[in-house]
Length: 480
Image 1 (cartoon, rainbow, N blue to C red):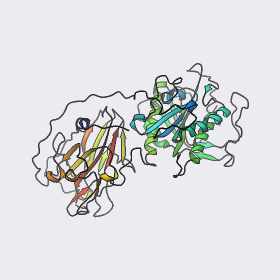
Image 2 (spheres, one colour; image 1 turned 90 degrees about the vertical axis):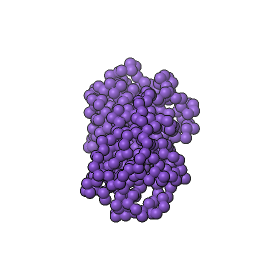
Image 3 (cartoon, rainbow, N blue to C red; image 1 turned 60 degrees about the horizontal axis):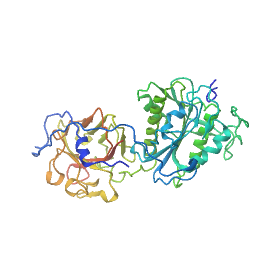
């Protein structure tokens, strides 16, 4: 019987010239004006890639038993596991050399700006079926978990917590939504067999529900799309099982509620639990945990400012502002990057940079011109340029007045003295009438880490400026 259940990247200019190449099939009918004659760089060949695993890194400072604060300037994310495969899914995020001799990979994981720490017990044998209590941190014991969980969390002050445990003996990746402040629990292995006190949380009545704050639907979709053969789903109406799984899950969401205030320096914005099917292989469990972690980080970045900042102030753009609400027309993989306008793409994943024709230009049977820039890095407040003649703010600005020169320019608008020449390989892009154009389309993605800010000028009859061109929405593209 299974008692746990029902029973900071550094983009390089040279790299950008290799990376942001893109080609598109362009309609050839009727441009609105003749393009200026510009010399184009030849198409470059492939570039060398990296492996998809970060080199092992030591913790930012020794943390004896992980009690005591870390000196890392980055916010932390906490992972916790129990019986395999849940502990094996997160082992590489342990900063303990004894538990993770391969080396901690959680330091600034995938360049996303967060340190990721994992805590879990050990079992003999490691691939146990009837695993018992285990040894080490977070043993499958109410008192041990109680004594370990909050000190571990307090030592790293996580911005998000994901707890894992073994679920049904199948291929599931079950996202729990409900954790209760129970007074009745299934007994563990060592006396006292139940939580002390029970219910554990005296701040709310017995039986109080504390729901997950993880993006459970997004996680299920991402795991199901990862090609791992898992069945990921959200448990909407049930509970966590009444054993240590639900108990640790409750501690996680309880900690998050304690530190949920926006002015809390240890603010925690997301917590919840995943039951991992007992038949899931360890490699697939590790990959599904990373898919889950990436999805949670994307969610966290919609609540707090992403590490390294955002372009929320100069990113909205002004397309259609002269006629009504502004429109987003610039996309990475179909996304505008959320409120912070930062879009993360995994190395090796498909990458598309596309632009839609502004609605004011639809239906005239003509192509729409644009000038798209790729700038290195994320703009600081000093890089927000207020354009003259009522066009509004733009990140970095057009080439003639930019705070730094663009690494790449796709220019079919012309006006080279002000906007700069077209420097991207291929013909200057033109958006076909009433549709979207893929300016960069890399089905195999990139194997290097980059961080660039994308923003454009585009023809727009509803411009708020003095002639029919508008600043588009901007976004930061991070490939990690």
